Image 1 (cartoon, rainbow, N blue to C red):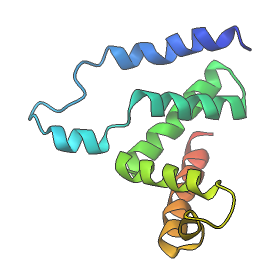
Image 2 (cartoon, rainbow, N blue to C red; image 1 turned 135 degrees about the horizontal axis):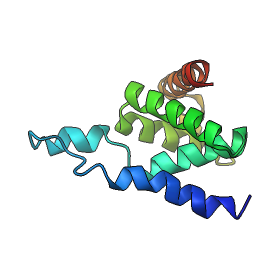
Image 3 (cartoon, rainbow, N blue to C red; image 1 turned 180 degrees about the vertical axis):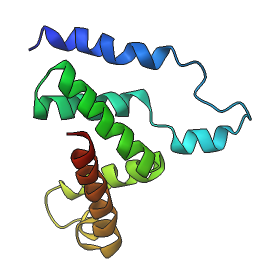
Length: 125
């Protein structure tokens, strides 16, 4: 499998480099920055999905579909906040991260991401 990853990364990155500008023709850079997912986040999501579900071209299609659904449903800024919350929740102890472990708003944000991911699984797998 280790030999497949470099080829897989090239395969994943190629379509991303041909698309031209990531911003709309109207020059609204602020909106594009808030909604566009960075390539590293896309790659991390798809590779994580593939490692969990099997490395094949069929799984690549399904995981890409899953990511596309998540990206269409959740703006990047919100996705980034939830990923930060998930990281903070993994911190041991009851220090500063305690508010993120027990607050209603954090739980709702994480639940929303999980629901969108579940829906993407139903649609794509």
